[in-house]
Image (cartoon, rainbow, N blue to C red; front, side, top):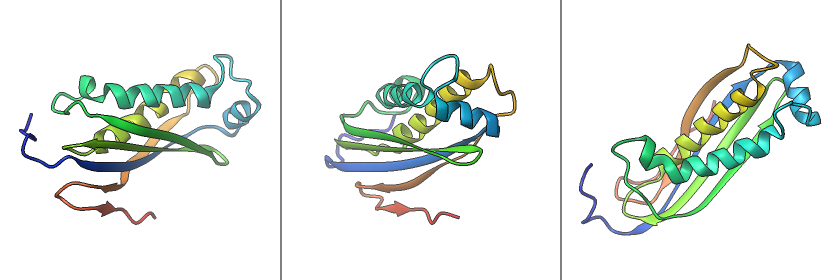
Length: 144
């Protein structure tokens, strides 16, 4: 791990997004709460929050951080679910990996909960949308 001891403690924020593409029938089952394993989006939200907390255990060179806030949102489309994770910390290094991990684990959780009814699912386009805080400056991705 790199030495972050001399870096200033500042507020760090990151937002990541990704999507999972599902069949029309699966989206409808999720909307109706009829997936046999339970409430897909709430389970994915809880898994994503846990992923934020556990990122340093999964990614070897990630520092443990003092996370102050995380928010996971879902936007159900016609045949996809967009996942967005916002993570905030007050620390010496950024929270990009925590936000990206949250999105990834949320997508994997949706996949796991729906795999019994949909073999065609695809997880795609996981990316950092923005970050702020820190000496490298702010970043904002222009969406397509």
